[in-house]
Image 1 (cartoon, rainbow over the protein chains, first blue to last red):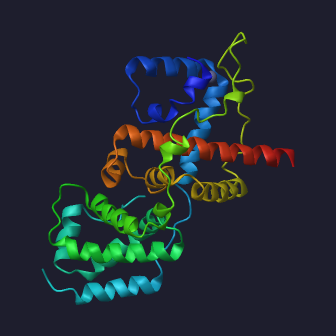
Image 2 (cartoon, each protein chain N blue to C red):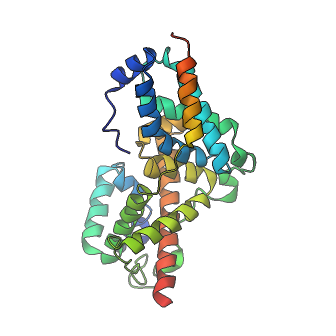
Image 3 (cartoon, chains in turn brown, orange):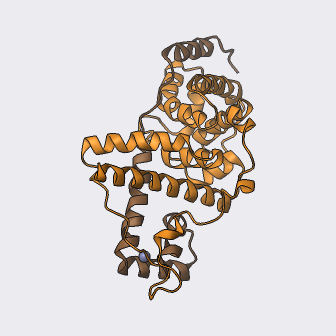
Length: 76
Length: 212
Ligand SMILES: [Zn+2]
C-alpha cells in the first residue's frame, strides 16, 4: 500500500468498514510507515478535539418557557 | 456525550408521560447543548439554532405520548431537531449540490505531498506530516478548539452536518444515517472528507505557528 492510498482509507479503517484483505494491507503499511502513523494519529487527535468543543447552552429564558409549556401540557 | 445521569429510555418516557417536570428539566439540561450544536450545523446563526431547539422540545412534548421505542429516545429527539432545522435551513438555500463542485471526490490530501511516478517510492510522503504540539498543554488545546470551531463552520454543508453529528455530538454512524436518510457509504465519505479538511487546517496552523 502507498501513503496516498492509506490516507484515503483512515476513516473506513476507524469505522471498521475495510474489507479484511484491505485492512491487513492497511495495518502492514501502518507498522512500517512513520508518516502514515503520524497522519492517523493526527486524524484521531482531530476527532478527539472535536468531541471537546465547548457546549452551546440553551438560553435560560428558553429553558423557562419550555418548563412552563410542559407544566401546561395536557395529560395524554 | 455521556448521559450517565439519565435513567433508561423506558423510565424516562414513562416519567415524561406522567408529566414529571423534574425529568423533563433533567432531559433538557442533558441534551440541549448537543442539540444546539447540531442545529447550528444546519442554520446560519446562533439565534435560529436556539429557536430550532425550542421548537424541537415542543415537538418532543407533542410526540412523546405516541413515541414507539423503535429507535433510542435520543435518536428520536435528534431526528426532530434535524427536521425542524431543515425547515429553517437558511444554509440549505444557498447549497449547490456538492457533486457539481467536485467536493465529494478527488484526493483529501494534496497530491503534491506524495512522490511522483518517476520516484523510486511513488505515492509515498515526500516529507512526513510535521508533529503537532502536545494537546496536554492547555494553551494548545484551547487554540486547537478555536481553530476547529472556525474550520468546521467553513466546511461544505453536508460535511459539516455529518462531522458535527458524529464527532462533536458523538452519535453512531447508524444514528446519523437514520437522522439524515443517507447511506452508510455516503455518510463515511462526508465524514472522511470533513475530518481530512479539519486535520489539514490544524496542520497549516501549527506550521505557521512554528515559523512565527
Ligand atoms: Zn505511508
